[in-house]
View 1 (cartoon, one colour):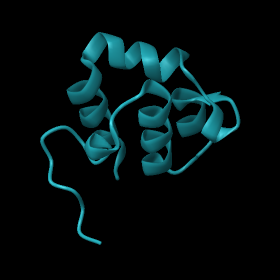
View 2 (tube, helix red, strand yellow; view 1 turned 90 degrees about the horizontal axis):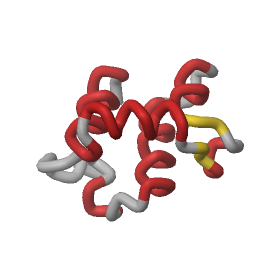
View 3 (cartoon, one colour; view 1 turned 30 degrees about the vertical axis):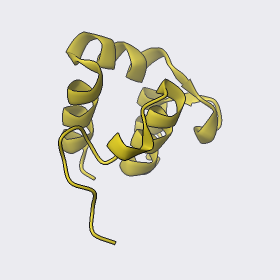
Length: 74
């Protein structure tokens, strides 16, 4: 996942304003109590950050690959 894909996924799932707020403010226990913004700044894997954000925000697992996107091939 690239950073542009992360921000597209955030906007698609949460909306632009609410998504920015979550990335800035929501503490992600899966990432050692960092916010997504802090995690990205520290170089945490972008996809891992996205998954942690989804988990913390209660996004159904079926949408962790992005709203309206097919699941990635395994």
